[in-house]
Image 1: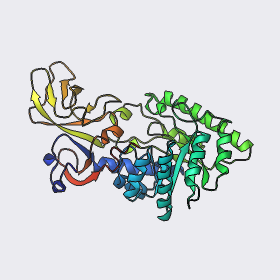
Image 2: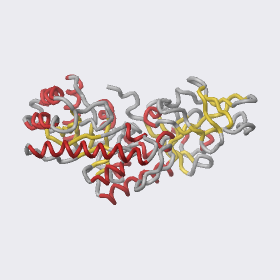
Image 3: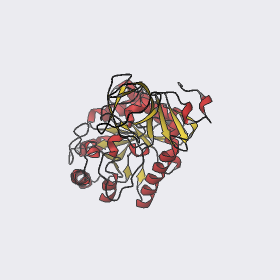
Image 4: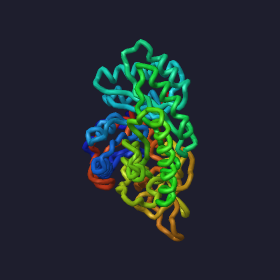
Length: 379
C-alpha cells in the first residue's frame, strides 16, 4: 500500500496528497439507505463491485443484506473471491476458452465454500464454449441471457431471440438458466427524472416481450436483474425485476449527483473524495497536486467540495482552480482542497488503497485502510 498503516488513528491532516478518501459516515448512511430500500420493496440487491473493487466493502454490503455482488471481469471475480466474497455474478460475456477455464475453476472454488458463480451470455457460441470448459467438472454455473434494452452494447435483441439461447443452456447439465440480464447504462445518466422514466418504460416493455416469448415455449424466467444508481426505483416499481445492480450509490460521484432527484428513490451523500493540496498560486488561479492520474475524467472533471471554485484541466499531475465569480477568493498556498470525482469506478482503479475517515473531512480521524483488491484486474 502507498499509505502506511501508521496513519490509523491520526487526523485527516496527516494524509499525504493526493489521496483517495472515504467519508465512512456518509458511506455507511448510503449503505443503509439502499439496504432499507431493497428490504422495504422486497427486492434483492446485488451491488456492482466493479465500482469499489474491494472485498472489504463487498462483504460490508453483503452483511447489510445484499445477496452477493456483480463484477465485469473474470479477474475482478477472482480478486474478490480471494478476499472472501462467495456469491459473484460476472454480468458480462466471457468468450475466450482460457478465460472460461478460469471461470469454471472459480465456480468450483466458490461452490466448495457454499457460494456460487453466475455469468452473462448473449450468443450460442458463448454458451457452447462455457459448456465445453465445464465438461466433466463438478460445477453448476448460473447463466443469464443478456438482452440489449437500449444501451447499445452487449446483448441480444429483446423478444424471441432469447429462446434459442435458453434452449441451448438447458441442454447442458453443468449450466442452469438463471434469468435475464437487462441493464440500460445510458439511462442512468439522463439528467431529468422524466427522461429516465421514459427510457425505463421502454426497458420494461423489452423485458416483458422477452419474458412472454420464453413463456410461450415453456421456459419460465426465474429472475430479471439490472438497474443502476440512476434508475433503480423505476425497475423496482415495474414489478418485473427481482434484483438491483446499483453500485455507485455507495460513493455517489459528481456525475450521478448531477441527476435531478427521482421520486421514490433515496438521495445519497458524497462519500468519495480526492484530498489535494494547493501547491502553487497566482493572481488568476490556484494549482492543486491532483491531476488526471488521481481521478478519472471520462464523465467530466471533478467538483470542488465546499468551496465556490471550479476545477480545470491542468494535466496529469496538476489541477487548476478558478473562482466561480469574478473577484472570488482563492485558497492559500498549502491549503487542503477536497475534490469530488466525476466517475467513481475508474477513479478507484487509479489507487492502491482508499483511506477511510470517521468524523468528517475536516476534523475526522483515519479509521481504516481499504485495499483496492481488483485494481487493474482487466482480464
